[in-house]
Image 1 (cartoon, rainbow, N blue to C red):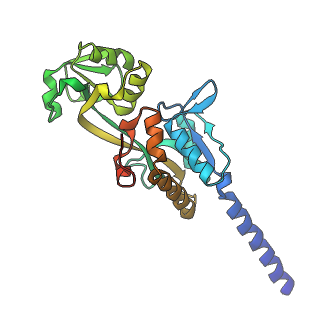
Image 2 (cartoon, rainbow, N blue to C red; image 1 turned 90 degrees about the horizontal axis):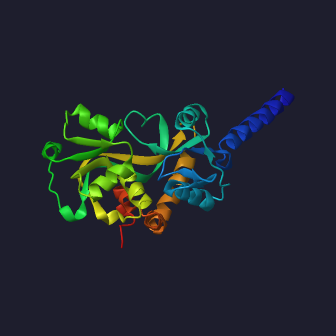
Image 3 (cartoon, rainbow, N blue to C red; image 1 turned 180 degrees about the horizontal axis):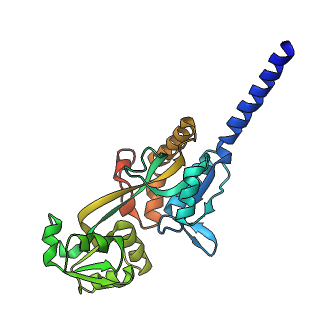
Length: 261
């Protein structure tokens, strides 16, 4: 009887040890995708504001800076099936809310109408935009939105750079896109973020680090605490400034560290 009890104790100890090691932070399977300006590769090296944020969290937690790059569909499949999986940058929405656990927000992207800042457009609603010419990426989600709303005043182009140049050259009045695309494209052509403004916000997407729902809550809390510490230190704001992506700084973070010049 005593031998059986001792055997059971050994078994339970080994089981608990294995369970804990399976969820030790250095065993997290962290993934990202090609999604500029948040995360992308240049000559095989990972770049982007989200990559910097995640790497800084890893450093503060004393974790190895290991991040795998996968196509979105494969990474999302792993996130759903692997108990130790982590994926960024992931949009948090109602459908996904209970499927994963979340740390962030690490960025926000607002889709809407942009104009030249000096034009000072006043557009209270999407209906008011029907009297202006609008640039949009052909066959894109933004174009699908406008077509679905029966907009006919569209002047689409095949890529964002062409649409930005139309706006800068005043060949179109407005550009319907998201702030992530706008910021990245301005940077690509050597223009400042301040040259164009979001004059009507249609929808906001909040970007997070997503964890498989089997990752312990205590681990999620540590990641969130470290991230918020970085925000309060001003480190996260400085990262956004360095990348000329201040328009993507989450408004929810301003209570921890407000935007500054």
